[in-house]
Length: 249
Image 1 (cartoon, rainbow, N blue to C red):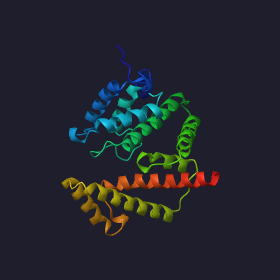
Image 2 (tube, helix red, strand yellow):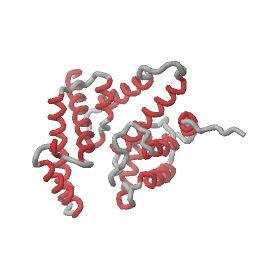
Image 3 (tube, rainbow, N blue to C red):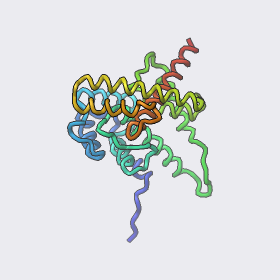
Image 4 (cartoon, rainbow, N blue to C red):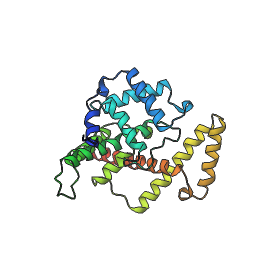
């Protein structure tokens, strides 16, 4: 009796046969995200509010209408098993829109790569970047360039990676350092505003950040490093978008 091993291609093809996100109800998505929260170990008191979940559902239907509901679960399953190209899958008690987009777009890249790999001849050792992936990156960039005002809270950091990979953004080492410093200042201001709530956790977080920041952004350690890197990417892309749109005007 022979057994067949389930391949990544099998998982992807099975997942995409499920209900499309554009057709999924709030109830369907709520159930699916309850499972995802459990998968990533998100504690109950850090689960997004009902209002935040509604905004998340709206974003998903608008930006990923043809993706399927089972792909949501598959994306986070691959993330927690360290099979996606993300620095850290852990939400650190912050399931934000940016966090979801980072994980799901890493899954999109992974699934495109797997499907392309399946079609690759055995003797071929290397492949150029798949044309569909390049097209998808350009479409994502153009979609955000068409927006009048880019909000840093809703600008995915992967857009910078796309633009840099396509040669649209070229930053020197000094420019990257300056943008990282700018991200640190933005983070400090954000934490300061949060601390005004007088919640003990927010005050402690702000004070800890300030202590690290006394010696400059280069001295910031721990989980804040990934946050700053993503903030810096957002800032760099928004600067690029602003310059590009100003030039067009």
